[in-house]
Each structure stands twice: as structure tokens, then as C-alpha cells.
Length: 230
Image (cartoon, rainbow, N blue to C red):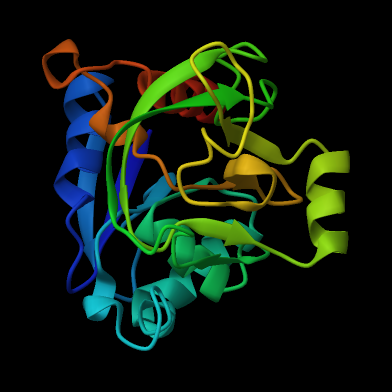
């Protein structure tokens, strides 16, 4: 099983993602440059966090047109896994891999800290190492993380169990106070209809070692490892 992490100009989560794949779960990981036209035989593609192209126009809007994204879209349409984290979530929405958009945080402030989120779906290829209702502590670092979509899209996501994670209190309650960016329904991560693309604003790759405060992100990578290997 081989991970490929895309590097756009302005990415800053690419090395963290490769560390999580290579060092935390012991899998091969390669970097894919935004101008590449080849995924180098990778099984899992990671669109990492950062500020691709300086977030000009809007986050992810320019990165969506990078040559590598043509290959990523084909990869996803084949049913192969794509993990889109933070800025990667924004890119995935811009590329049509996921519905909705990420807007400026309701507070109009950049948020960078550990947050708690509740596992809403424990049966996807990204989340089956968790249990439904499990509370995770994972860092965020974004200024444009407020997930939004048309009401019918949100209803479909909720009804089809495609909300993967939701911001919550440490006790699992969902409230405006715990919704760190104002996302609709407290949504922190969603899965596409086919179940092979996960977009999330929190950074699981930065929660894989006790020395950095949490290992709660490991479940995403172990879930992928088990699912893709099987």
C-alpha cells in the first residue's frame, strides 16, 4: 500500500501527512508535485493542509486546476481513496469531489488549537477503526473552515450517514459553543456518495504521536490501511 501526498505551492501539511503514513503506520509514501501528471502508482492520495497558491481568489480555487488534480479526480472516480485535509478539503470541494464549500470562520479569526470532535460514521474506509460516538482530540489550523452547503445537500449528507465527524464538547454534546468555525450542523468532515473521498478540516496527521499531544488521528490511517489492504 503506497501513499501519495500532493504538494501545492503553499502546502504546509504535506510532510506531516507523509510522516503519518511512513513512520506512524509504516507504509511507503511519496510526494506528488502539483505539476505532475502521474500518481506514481499510489493507492491512497492525500490532499494536505496549507495555503495553496496563497489562498488567492478563495482557498483551493487555483489548486483545483493544477495538472495533478486531473489525475486525482480520475483516481477518485475509479473508487480509489482520497483523504482531503483542511486546505485539501477546500481543494476537493472546488474540484467537485465533495459537495459544499468552506467559508470564512464565523468568528472571522484564524483558529489553531486542539479541538474535540465526535465520530458520526464508523463504517467507512476512513473511520471503521473508531466507534460511533467516540470523542477525538485533533488539532485544527484554519481561517476558512466553516462548512456550508444547500439545505437539500446537508439533508442528504445527514440522511445517508455521510457526515464523518462533528465538532462537539468533550462529553459529546454538539452546540454553538463547541462549533469552532460555525459549520452547518457542526460538521467537521464528510464523505462522498461512493465512500472513497473524505474531506475534513481537523488534522489527523498531526495527531499520531503522544509527543505532539494526541494519537487520535491514527484511526484514520489504520482504517485506510486495513480497508485498502483488504
